[in-house]
Length: 145
Image (cartoon, rainbow, N blue to C red):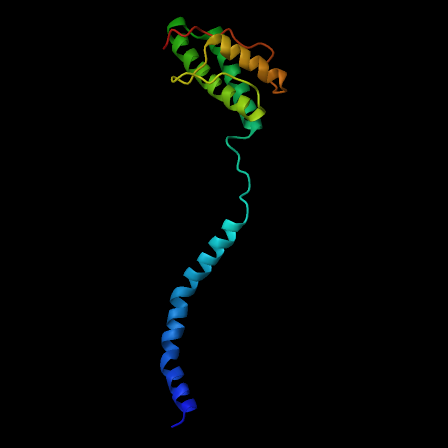
């Protein structure tokens, strides 16, 4: 028995084990190579919020709802609903200001702006090119805090 015969015998004995190990570990090796490949490439920029079109649509809808509530709702129901709608308007207005780069005040912990800040930011957004209704407000006071 020569060295070549011993090598062939060892290959015949080890082949099933090597094939099994390849089947088991090849997906992990490929995944790690792919992860390293992805880590080398710079990441694509990701948006930080909803698209500006969606923000503008939401603001127009909320402002229209605010106008309807101001004109029609009973006084007792109107105050609570108006406060909720104005809170939603201020959240969307701040998101739109961030997206457009418009300077804006950061809201306090209740996450709503007061009536002057809200009116100012909406007019600044309209000046920046965001299409909003011509008349916004009047907004209620901050008695809800």
